[in-house]
Amino acid sequence: MRRRRFPSGFLFLCVLFFLCFKGVATARIYIDVNAPSAQKFNIAIPDFQNQGGDCPRLELSSELPGVVSNDLDLSGYFSPLDKASFLEGKNGPIKGKHINFKDWSVIGAELLLKGVYTCSGNQLEVEIRLFDVFFGRQILGKRAIGKLDEYRLLMHRLSNEIIERLTGHKGIFMTRLAFVGTATGEREIYACDYDGHNVRPLTKDKSIALLPRWSPDGKRIVYNSYKNGGPMLYLRDLVNGSLTRLSGRSGLNIGACWAPDGKKLALTMSHKGNPDIFTIDLQGKILKQLVEHWGIDVSPAFSPDGTKLVFVSNRSGSPQIYLLEISSGRVDRLTYEGSYNTSPAWSALNRIAFVGKTDGHFDIFTMAPDGSGMKKLTGDSGNNEDPCWSPDGRYIAFSSSRTGEYHIYMMNANGQTQRRITFEKGKQTSPSWGPE
Image 1: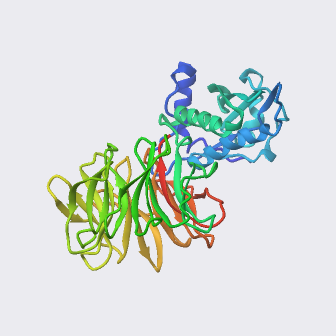
Image 2: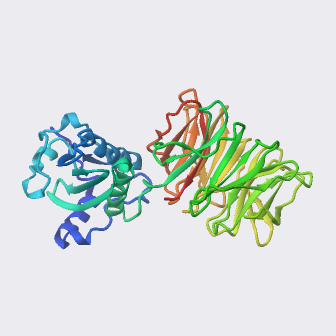
Image 3: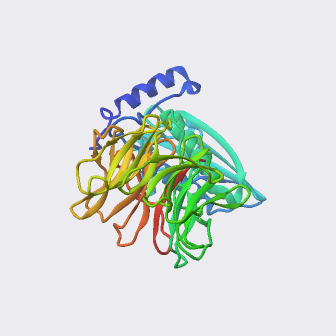
């Protein structure tokens, strides 16, 4: 007997009933993304139908829905069903009144996504329709047009439409990552789509490039490079391609982070002797010394409103995470568990991720800004380091050695749905998550 999941999806069904009564145009929230553990919904995504044109590209029949399926799987809210279980044959109807929803209900599908596409020259047109299987009603219909050779971007746009309709929040599928990769044998900075595809180099220094950080507007990246000697800080403009050295002072110029307004950066410099945290403007001019202490102070990260800063210091004898209130200069220690805590990152939803050492391994933790509510997200899977938040604060990208070599992974903010997303040659570490 097939197990029904109605009780666990009761809220989902109640909202659907309301939406069906009110009409498709009133669709709002189906999935509570703020729940501690979101219920995953089974979604069936059959191959899209080719509707002709002068460039058939038959392989897109499976590649287009494959992108959407991967997007929805990575979101952590859906479980795409195996196509082998589908009862409907190829080229089934795409309009609700002709679809036999029993064929989809009997295999456990709760949602059904149908699609068609047309190629003309270098132009691709895709139409998708999303259905609630239980009620047999369409809940989303969208058409999009884009360049054929950018079909993944087009499908990410449609995936965002699905997520926004079902959760009330924008999706992350058109965001980007920067990371350090060793594919050439040197450490260079690369960028890719959020899912690890479309990897392209941002540096070709043939040296050691480290710690990339996207600007809040996504138009610039700062990073450290040893190409001219010590670890200097560089700013690359991704719009015009220009490269500027922001800080080449003697000693350290490392670990820069952007202020939320994008007008200044905080970083560790040691030109005065001790490694302390300063702010500089986008011309490299020192604005203020934020932290001054005999200990080593590194890895700053601003709060979402820019009024506070978390950082790492060994002033207590081991690396621990501290909170600075910028206006008053008050510093409070946040972490007391474990002898090694580092790499803090502050999310748009006001949660701090960091790396802690437990049982000889590094793992990802999160906590509230006052140090309470600590939660371990990874474990028993190699070393897990370099956490960074998605722009919406609902996902974390990080590096992990769980396969023996470091690669980039992503997970939901609660630690669920951990997936590897980079498969390039060599190592991939130190991710930074940029906006669309």
